[in-house]
Image (cartoon, rainbow, N blue to C red; front, side):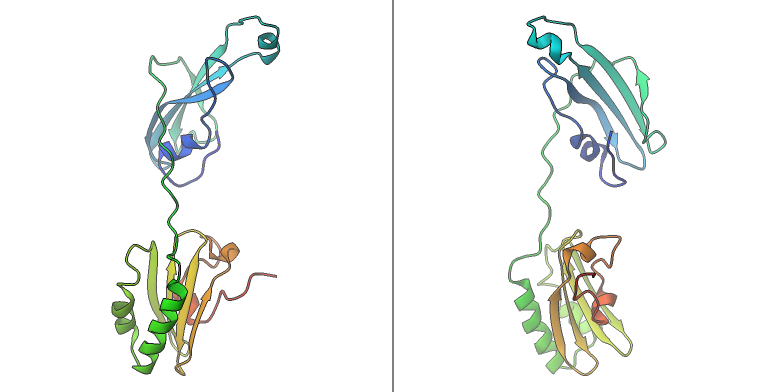
Length: 202
C-alpha cells in the first residue's frame, strides 16, 4: 500500500482503494483508524482471474485481508483472517486550499502604504491579518539588515511573498511552485525578508 507520512488513515486508504469486488479485482478498506503516527488499517483484496472471466466461467475469487499498524508495519501488512465487516465508504478528499485570486496586488498596495508609514513588524502583522483570513499560511518576520518579510500561502505549492526592505523599497512576488513546497525553500517570511524565492532553480 502506498503511504505518505501525513494525513489520517482515511487519507492513506483513499489513495489505494478501488474496483468492484463483485466483478473485478478490488481493494477495499474495512478499518481506517487514527493517522500515520498511531493508527490501524485493514484492507480486503479481492482477486479475480480475468482469463477465466473472459471464458464465461464464474471462478471463485481469492480474498485476502491485511492489517497495518501504523507506523510500525507501514511497509508490510500482516496477513489476517478477514473480519466480518462491511467495506468502508471513503469520502472524497476535501479541496486543496488556495491563495485567493488578486491577493498579490492587494499585498503590494498594503505594503506600499505600510512602507510610507515606516511600520514595524508588529504593525505589519496586525495590518495584514484581515487580508490573511482563511489563508492556510500567514507569517511576518524581520531580518536585520534586510527588511520585513510577509508570506501568504496554501501550505503546499502556492506562496505569495513580499517585503519592505530597510531602504523602504517594496517587492511582491510568487515563489515558484517547485521551491514553495514543504521540504524545499517553502513559504517562509524569513526567506521573504531576504528576498529569496523569486526565481526557479536552474
